[in-house]
Amino acid sequence: MTTETIQDRALLQLVNALRERGYHFVTPTPLTHERVNQRPENQLAKDLQGVFGWSRPFQQDLLPPGIFSLMDQAGVLAPRESRWCSRVRLSSLDGQLFVHSAYPTDAPDSVFFGPDTYRFANTIQTHLNHHPGNIRRAVDIGCGSGAGAILTALARPHAEVLAVDINPLALRLTRLNAALAGADNLSTRHSDLLNDVDGDFDLILANPPYLVDPGERAYRHGGGALGADLSLAIVDSALQRLAPCGTLLLYTGVAMKGSQDPFRREVEQRLEGRGFDWRYREVDPDVFGEELLDGVYTECDRIAAVVLEVTRPAG
Image 1 (cartoon, rainbow, N blue to C red):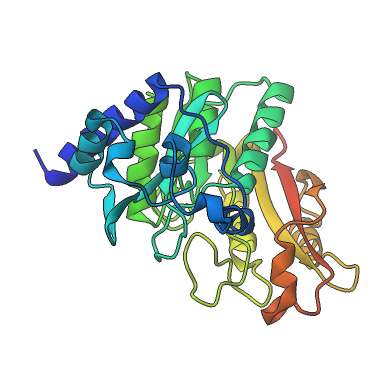
Image 2 (image 1 turned 30 degrees about the vertical axis):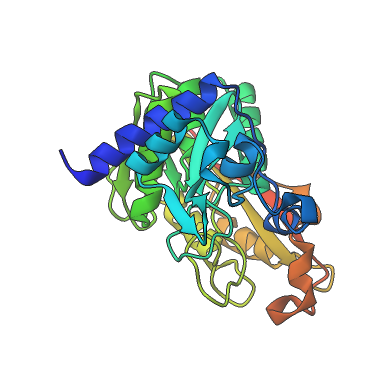
């Protein structure tokens, strides 16, 4: 048995132990996380949410011995001077717990989970509720923690659901989160977009990074002048792989400049005259407003969260 397998088993036991203790945590934006943690009374964790949600340092005697031991076996204990921190966070979503990277997510292979994940999950659930048709194959491009793929697998237990990513840690945590959720019809695959998977899909999901990140961290950097390149690449890839009546469901962010939506303009050009049915809407008009203070966004009006639905005709 490999070290990673032993650690994964311990991590599963750890999450289940926390679930039995009623652990619940809703993960905020990084800016909110920073501001709340900066309060003097929040310098040290006082409970399980402080350790596994807010990523605060803690004294060993704060945790039951069994919890601390499982953290050690899972390889998620990090020393912090005379104290400890968790290398992972646990977030609640739709009755499930999802493991993802601890705050701050500085590492290049960090696996992010936050308000965008909740909005993406709501987008998926709304789509599935309004489109009860048969889904044989679905894929989540850039699956991250696996939230989108797992919610789809649970809602459509007879579907084959793939979760793909270029980040090995994202695939590992997706497998763990799928096991925790009991999503037995989900499998993971290392793939750059859809280049390393075969066949067509009835549902293609994506919640890609859409900001310009100076460090080009994979979970955050969307590429291009304003962060839209990866989202556009997903559109291009998905249009080639949709089955008849299949749908691309893309949640992303768009930097609005001069009251114009440059991403929508690019999408319109790609879809013009090709017979696809499509719908585009803003689901949040103002996200990550702090990005407008410097860098490439100083001339932008706002960053909006949008959803694009594209459906291939039946014939």
